Length: 389
Image (cartoon, rainbow, N blue to C red; front, side, top):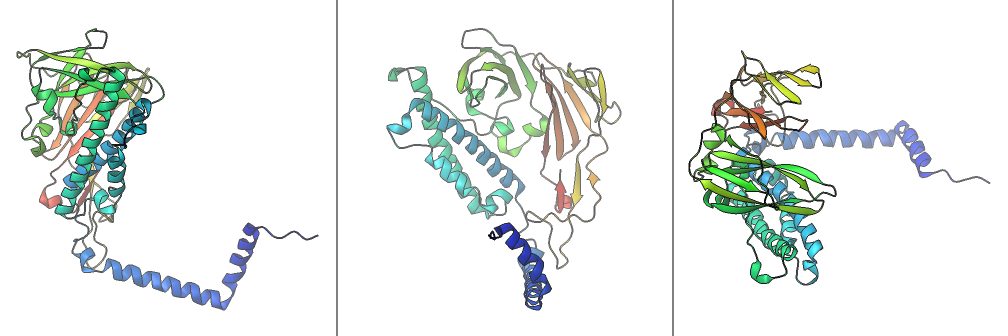
């Protein structure tokens, strides 16, 4: 009895036989020619060659992507809290708007920042309204978990500008509670950073134990950011939230104890960290070495950018197309000025490469990794056709 050939073998046989036939060759050639024509017509349109479609509003793009990421995390957390308290069984879910907003934010204009300004403002409106709905849901869930007595309800606030070290509650309240939620299935530790004015603060765990804290100056490049024009925060209050239970939370009580403040003094050291050590080159101010467990690893650190290719009736380099003008990259600077801050919780290096590019290198105590947090922009007009990385 003959067995029927499998779809794989049938497909393989057809692929091997058809290319040998003249009709197949004719169809394949027509398709390739059509692809060449479509590509040439599309990328030669005025919108592509005059950069109308490729000019990306970078601040707008990062703001929307940042909020969308926050939106996704908040949706994840809100769903868990709603499931634990079974609020969704007694009323319509208030986190549906988060899901709907995330659907809208998948549009390519939202991701690349190429939408018109009024469209960007509408995206921000959608995200902000979704955050407010999620805040209400989280507030109900947390209050139900904390107490069954409705008269003891606490109000939950969002701090949506932490990426520029700004938060209305932490800057203007002398007493407030910070709730740190762990959405994972295992216990974790998390370092908390709260933007505050120059003052003295204490942080207490749920059992009343005082936590080790540290005041770290906010980098001057962040202080000068136009997005935080009304902010009074000058430092980040940093502490470690330890042993956060799986699918649970801990609340920390922050109190402003005095308006007096002893200014944080820079360290004269050229290295940060203990178990994991980051070493600077004294001449260039760039990271040159990592040390850990007796092993020394050489490191080359800098910020570079590619120059974008001019249109010339071809594909313009921009938000949709990465088309550098050659393969060489350009360093923003061969050196950086730097300030080192050390404390009981975290060590930081604040590097400045130019008036539009800076970076913070950070090592938290008892952690075995290094954080590199860079800030680029506003990019000068002479570098408008550049891609930074």
